[in-house]
Length: 203
Image (cartoon, rainbow, N blue to C red; front, side):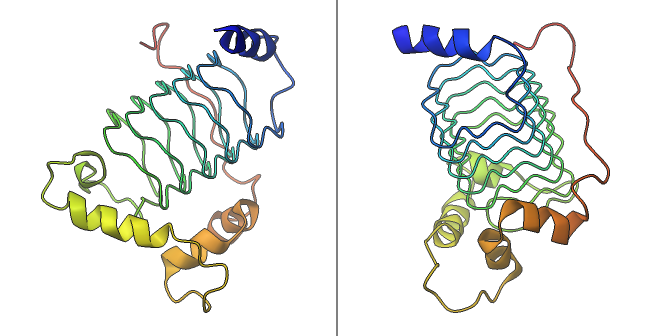
């Protein structure tokens, strides 16, 4: 409880978090409601159960971050790096995931209502297209869930000492996020994705 209060005090002071390096930060249960974390580095951060409703995480790096049970309702994760992140049981309702990289991410039990996944890279390396089935990543009872999970597990293995990547998905995983964005979408300054807040209540 004390750690949660300290996190709330620190991260509600306003400003100063855009582009901040918070690699490996312990932010479990933190109150980051509508925080501006655009382009912040949160690689390996513990954000379990945190309140990130309406937060601006555009172009943020969340590689291997733990967001299990977090509430990201109405947040902006456009062009964010969520490779190998834990998003199990995470609330992702009305979230902007446009052009985000979810390669190897775990989405079991995640709530993905009214989510913008346009051009996003999905956990198994597929690029999202309208009408694609997302339940195979989130629903254990889906007939393709086990096969999809096995593929994601293979993509998540450490291949630093392996032979050069042979697939597009493997190539994406090995690129630094900035280089990935520039090679895939052009300059980081092109077509910025602005923060949208969906109404006063984000519950």
